[in-house]
Image (cartoon, rainbow, N blue to C red; front, side, top):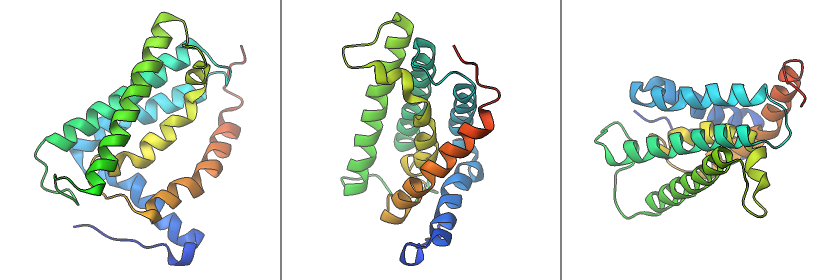
Length: 179
């Protein structure tokens, strides 16, 4: 059963409820746990590394992005009746597929760059992609098709992006290895 939460006129409390729904949903469905837990683990590992661009970070991030995209494709084309939306040519299906393809493409590029030890021209940003895990985790239940895309969900993800990044940055600063 899906609970639709609407952020009351852009209030932080309303977006907080929407954000909590995004974070809780993967842990309420066993078939989503195996997909989201490695993202959390990879995010924590990346947070303990230097913020300097590296091939190691690119490989870690590339693997996490490919993992998320593979899980979304598996979720999307498997038979899971608990989903909020169904397959079909809809705007939401198109958005989900575009996001999945982009995540997979960037993930493969980052993974290959990390393994080869060489970034493509203008591609060194792939070594700075630590924060991409936040977005993968936040959109995970949407991309897994358990929740649908909505402006409230998108706004909740954006509203909490900087506070979460700052919190993690400060919390992991003592553990981060400067190289």
